Image (cartoon, rainbow, N blue to C red):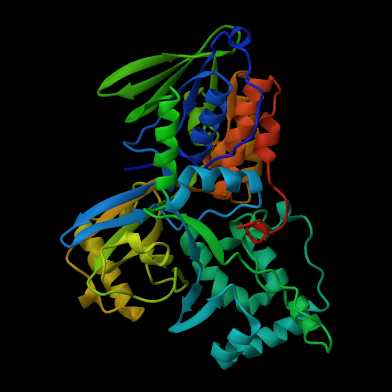
Length: 492
């Protein structure tokens, strides 16, 4: 049940319809039915193009899909991870509102960090730390705070590791307690070998120097916080994609599922003229004028004869129905203890009450792994027993779990951004740029650790590049790469 896709969704941009005679009804192949692929298809079909979407899964949505488990007491719905719709783009928000109507709910986020038997607010807050942290952590943090007043921060994030970036801002104590073990578990490598160039877009915590400034009389807090309210579809995040796919098919877009791309035909002019894909035990050929691909950047390179050496971190999910109404009031819990198998404990019901039968709930454990390793290959019963022990450690009574469980996988969950990835990524981009009618887009397609709305906008940009005849490929690869936390700017 591996995935080949991207991350998520749409934009209602008024556009003059391009004449059919000018287009000659060009046929565009979109590889991947995740957010970016579906978004690109929408823009293209609106402009009058013929569009065929290929996807290896039996459903649309990619990593943003929702799967339904039919349990003894009713249906339980599980996303591939913890998704929510947040954007600072009012047109994009308007499109999603119109698409989903009354099926789009408002939800409130509440997250905590679980570490060494203690519970901390997430993002970390000074008052909460003082209230809950053990004395050695508070003393260490205070010493680090004093040191931070005299230490300059590294400014060039492309040359520093994740460990260096965190320690330079939050000190060694907070890094060791809240970041080091969790990050190593999530990415599968030492944080000292993980690039720090994505950290400022994903981490909105207190800077210890700013803490010191705010302790002065008359100073007000300016710490950025994560968006607490967000949009979420009634029947799981994937409902957004299934609804979009239905609208696309009404407009004439062909969506071919269970289709694993296995080859690319290139002509003498270095133009991709056809895509080969495995469907129902047969290799089929899709002739096309243009290709928009959301397949993993490394896979697209391999299909065109180049080894990029780029890799992805995988995830396995264990989804367990529970015979209680609620486990906690948290949307998700970050599990920082290295000996606990998962990195996040989520309760889908916290996003929408329709995610589980009335009077019952469920939990989803997110477990980082690599495809083919022990966790990936572990038998479901064995994994369930291991996770139930972890739940007991976290104070969740395993007796509340039914004997039912549902496990799923996502192969290309996180682009593995070690200290060497930028150079490898640039070589991959250079290789693929030789094919003039190929546009890479989306999370996996551009090898970027981005949010849903960014992937949606990337898909739209890819389509506009085709429609307008303007090469925006470099712009797509670098889109929304600003060094600031993106999530806090949501208009939701």
